Image: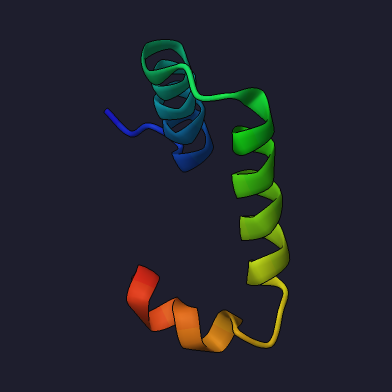
Length: 51
C-alpha cells in the first residue's frame, strides 16, 4: 500500500497535536520557521542533513 507523503504528514501531525497537546502558537512558529528556512540561503546547508 502506497501512502502519499502529505497524507502521512497530516496523520502524524494530528496524532502528535492530539497526544502531546503543544500550544498552538508553538505549532505555528515551528511550521512558519520551517517554511521560511526552506526558502532561505541556508536551505542548501540543511538539505544534506534532512536527507
